[in-house]
Image (tube, rainbow, N blue to C red; front, top):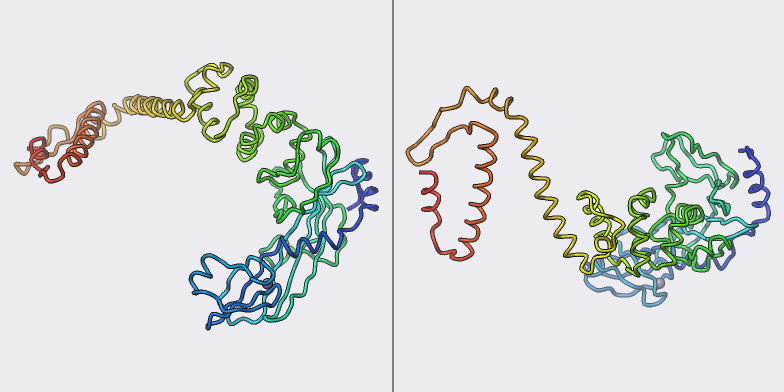
Length: 387
Ligand SMILES: [Zn+2]
């Protein structure tokens, strides 16, 4: 597609001088981004599909479950018990590059084909580039993909040019395929623009796609603050939840930072803050948001919340009293009995709740009794109540 604005024009211009992916980078990909097959014959002979080395393996189950490492090339192999003589597969790798002031996330597809006992043949193709400006704006270069007659969204057409493609970001129903392409192994040496370096970012992606993480780091100083104050567990947790959730916690996070309180279990802490919010506690108060024993305080509020939920449920049910009476009134007063057990319809919601509570306590009591003395016949207690 032709560039539609100045920003895209500038990137198209910059892309013309972007150096090619180097041989070293591709070789690194072949060595680190691909999971090679270890073909296992019926007799237990294993052949490494990367270096063609073969040897007598251990038991099939051990090799299949635990995988195994080639003693020659040290690759971790996926063991396949198969008569198949040839294998092929494709993997992604990502190179983090910088060019002309832009951060470039480059996606390469690596493919290998091999016949058992022979060295593999490799091909690779750079299929996608995400160009990110220091202000977080981005655009995408990619090859075309086969879209007709296939359920796969990444059947790249390698003969098509790697060029600017449209991303219909204004349409909320649009599924951005480029966001779905997996990152694969990330080349160890990353080139960063100074604006990204300044945020404290080193190499950790916190389980995010590089584009998403970089755009957040470049546009929201809160992410930078979390990295610089070593609250990276919290950063990861909120990225996982969706970054927009940061605003729900930011006031409390600031209190933690001010008090030198490092959050070690971010999932628990966020959950705890949600509970404090539910009970209307002051989320600016270190007494609440920096507990010495997070687990204990969290659990205390969980119990409190369960009680509050139960009360709310009772109130809701009591509101339904009229419709309950209407539906069941014709059975009121009716008792079915065999002399031991009496069955009758409870005549109000309140009665149901009371009965529910008794039964719950009773059940707890029974469990306790059976723990105390599991030889005792508990039937007499049953009959005492129901006779
Ligand atoms: Zn090998």
